[in-house]
Amino acid sequence: MPEATGNPEAARFGVGIPASDEVFYVKGSNHLDWGMQDRLSRIFNPKSGKTVMLAFDHGYIMGPTSGMERMDLNVRPLIPYADVLMCTRGALRSVIPPNSNRPISLRVTAGSTVLAGDDLFQECIGVNIEDAVRLNASAMAVQACVGGKYEYATLKNLAEVIDAGNRYGIPTLGVTAVGRELTRDARYLAMASRVVAELGAHVIKTYYCEEGFEQVTAACPVPIVIAGGKRIPELDALTMCYNAIDQGASGVDMGRNIFQADDPVAMLQAVRAVVHDGEKPAQALEMYETLKNQS
Ligand code: R5P
Image (spheres, rainbow, N blue to C red):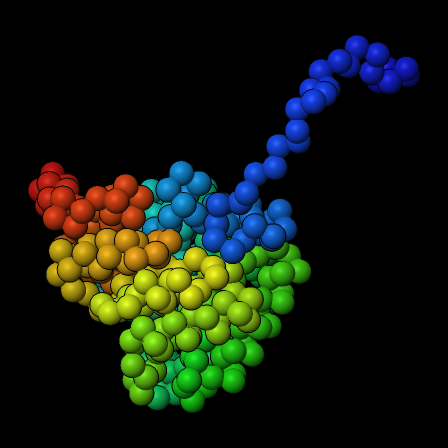
């Protein structure tokens, strides 16, 4: 029974102790609402402040991509080592066990495939906000092609998804798509990332560049994660991760360099060591080889 007289024995009011007020650790996110911060803290590890997202949304534009021919067989062994799963709703519902309990970065744009050639980036919003909520998405991923033929349409998609996500507390991951006519240098990547961030994206996915990447991250007011791109030798991929983190990236959102590696589970663990523990590329490669030989 509740006490009719209130709380006569309550005494621990901590009079004189200032109310605790913590600064939220994700770049540029201190003023966001509780649901947004909760989801971002599922994406970015509170200890390291970084994230390793496993991207396997390639099928929505490429079909059965090498290394991801059988998502049920290829993705499930990787799940325990990924901080976030980035995928389509079709992949999520058909192959990811809901009790995996991994945050989801849900691909919500659609409309073209690699068969469309130069029209690859002609996309619309392919998943409505109710479905993203139903799937308990921790972020919604939207492709934006700054400077490309579909700049207006893709930035409109981005703005609409950000508005919808803001209504429900779901962050938007802005993916800077770079058409063949554009150069992936620091000048372009800084501009694309900044535009997407200024439109309100909460996390930016872009590419690493050898020269001036620290300017790309410095000019972007929210966290940047890098895509891996085409498969390269393991040491090169680990070096790219190391350099990106060293130059201000908050993590990776990587696909082919993990699931196309000779041993994807070992590669994902090596990438984790670089991103979360600051392991040097040569040591991370050693770790990869050891894990590979054990499996
Ligand atoms: C491409 O379809 C997706 O946006 C991928 O999620 C992205 O390119 C990252 O994957 P990867 O590391 O293979 O480039």
